[in-house]
Amino acid sequence: MVTHHMTILKNIHHCEVNCEHMTTFLKRLPDIQARTIQLQLLRDCADICSLAIKFIARNSPFAKQIAKMCASICDVCGNECLRFPDQESQHCAQICLNCARECRTFAMA
Image (tube, rainbow, N blue to C red; front, side, top):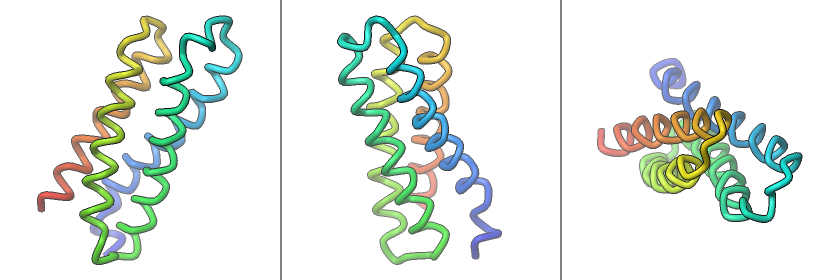
């Protein structure tokens, strides 16, 4: 079953890793105070991605519910990242929004 879900698992993992990287990146910026919401959402996004990977990989009966929640959090995080003009935030936003689409598709299947 894991082989069947490799694409979504890779996409979610990519989002998780990118959000973790962004938290480190943001902590080095001079405007960190203006990015507290972004920082919190990146952490939430990374955490829900980690959980979604586990549930999907083990074919949990709750996998679709977790994927739906993952989609919601990734959407919010991605939209928050879009608010900032730096290249890293814009890139992160695209990854989060892509993950949200993938999770939503999985949840509805």
